[in-house]
Image (cartoon, rainbow, N blue to C red; front, top):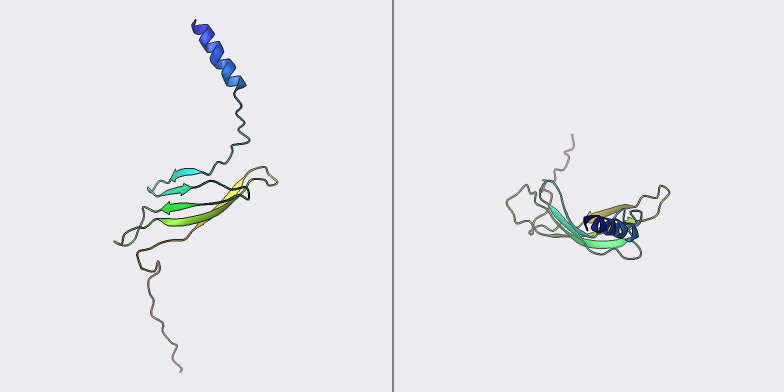
Length: 110
């Protein structure tokens, strides 16, 4: 009985279509990094475009961290047959600039 079960499992594994070439780079889903930030990527359309949300866990201030929208693009076909992708995050801060204000100093004439 055990041999028959093992043979059945092996047969199912061989028959089940599983092409690793088709699923080399699946971007959709929830991603985490070592610092605790997370990113959700929605479905990738036919043109390779996708959107999602990025929630950083890292801050240099005591202000509330907000979830920021992201947009990206995936290129599935290229010369090396490896998909590539990139994305940008439109950082959302709680009413503050992400960069500190710097005083503008006019040069003085000698």
